[in-house]
Amino acid sequence: MSRVARLGAFIVVTLAALAAGVFIIGSKAYLFRSTYRLKAQFDNVAGLAAGADVQVGGVHSGTVNSIALPHRPGEKVTVFIDLDKTTHEIIKQDSVASIETEGILGNQYLAISFGSDGQGEVRDGDLIQSKPPLEMSELLVKTSTILDSSQQAIQNATLATAHLNSVSAKIDSGQGSVGALVNNKDLYNNLDATTRTLNETVVQAQAGATDFRENMEALKHNFLLSGYFKKRGYEDAAGVTEDEIDGMPQGTPEKTFTYPANKLFAAHDSAKLQSQKSLDESGEYLANNPFGFAVIVVSAGPEGDTSKVLELTEARAMVVRQYLVDHFGFDDTKLKTLGLGKQPGHASEAGAGAIQLLVFPVGSSLPAKKLTAAGVASEATVDTPLPAASHEGIRP
Image (cartoon, helix red, strand yellow):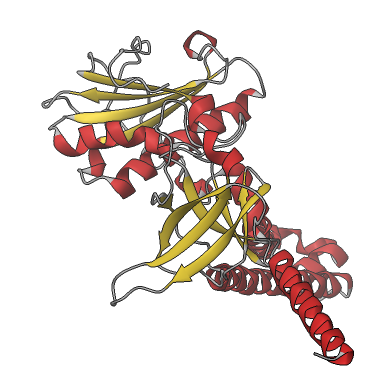
């Protein structure tokens, strides 16, 4: 082989090696590190692509190796995940994979939650749980609806203001009953009729202003929903007390499940579930056993603003109820909630509060709902102390 041919071959091999290196680095492959593989299945991967980042606790810890379409309709899309061996100690059988977005319009990546203490370790090739991705199209539709409503509220407020300006101008020029009353002392005998006219005008203005304020409040809580809902853990604040009872029911529960709040929720001031699988035992009990009614009782420690802590315990009770109703089949009209707020004597050892599911036997009467805005309840109840935690159903 001539010198020119050898030089050409050397250049070709070098360029090929360089190109291969570029592709390996670009795909974030863990070429020189020990890895293991897990699988997760989704109805829709929402734009996730092979080679996408995989984060565990917000840290880049692997890549999406490949994505396999189902073989027939009705089956799910399978995502194959390559993870660094260092994650093996924190990813457990109850870890959940979810598809997230970097910012509002960023790239898709796969996030895997930490597992719980006491859960079994995953093995190479295991299938882990998953939750459906949040569709940006749904968020955009909801945001568009809120914006349309707010625009109508602004128009109402503008019309009310214009009407007030028109009325004021007429009064200043002496037009109408109020204008005549102001400019002519002889018309005091028409005070009643003039007052009614003015009151009607004020009511219209207040209605427009109230409509505007309510819609702007809804927009404030729904615009760029990601950060707000991730922190609070619930969307419909109006439904927080929909199933809440007026106080602790009489009688002794036949079954009690107790959960520390710091193990069940993502943060001390959040109602977002992070270990919802811990609730499965109590959900299966409700689905497979007859009962009269059940109450989710949530208490918190002595720290924080009293009204905000009360709202937090009510929201946590609602979120736990929603999870049980959505995942287990039973008569949900018999599952009630009760947020106790700050209860130093009932808080967990960590001071973060506790969640109890109290199950009362068949034949027990449903307790009264929380008082409505009109101060009327359907039945009367007598408050009793929170029952002592049973050892049955306690989750770590």
